[in-house]
Image (cartoon, rainbow, N blue to C red):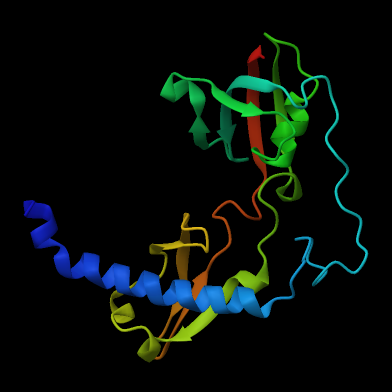
Length: 196
């Protein structure tokens, strides 16, 4: 066996067990929600208005952009420049956060713009339905988890997503399944490199 696996086998097994149990708990909570929810928080689409489609000359086209993302304090959280490769996506297809898509929709190749996105244009506001508390006794090994720690789970399609330990006491542990950037204002400098 690879030495680091042998040394950390107990921790790896613990995290896998906790991830599986939490996945099952999240899946049961999702099934409890009403089917057909549009995602706007209206509890099953009670006639809310969906977001209007994104319009612009680049919508439906493959766009390649370089970008730099920062928080309001100037801290950089991501940059395609650091990776040396532009980001490629279909504009307006929902592959990007809405505000990024809207910014690129009418750009010209070679143009560089800076945009400030409110949470609603980025990863949304934290959804209180994505916080859940479980008794530690129901999650064998969860006593080893600590506040702020991330455990990766799988959704129903087998795609991994992080869940953060929000709070923990002697009897319960509370998880936050919101995106880590939910509730944050984001800034992007976007350079449109190519449109196909």
